[in-house]
Image 1: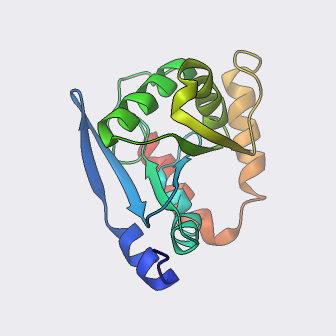
Image 2: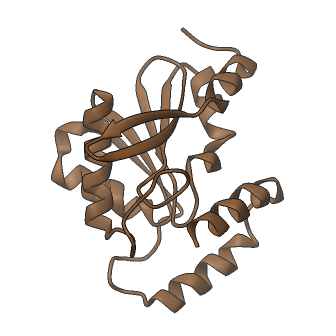
Image 3: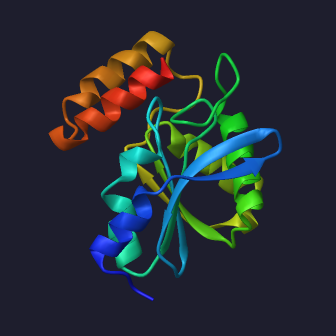
Length: 172
């Protein structure tokens, strides 16, 4: 069933939570149909997808976007997670959600995590979309990654600035 964009946006605006082992994961959800999982990049949250999520739901997809551990409102370990640990966390979240094979959309650093997920558990992944992928794991130093994020921020649509700034401040 397709949703009107207004109904999809209203559904998307509600925060949802699921327990994944000892972790409580926040996510957004809207729509029904084939499943698309939107995975945010470094330092931001599921809120980043506030336009894409409702639009995809209105087009006839079930759209979900989790806050990865340590980002948004999902607590995570001090020091963060490696790309492999993010992929494992994403897989556990998908298990807890009972997801069928889904299309995973990675943004920035999460492109590496969804690729790792596809390599670890190929039966979970129906398709991949890599939006603005970052460099290969271990090829960049932290300062270089931070500088790249700073430069990329100026190319983002200005309407995303409040969402991104709030998420970066929350992530520390």
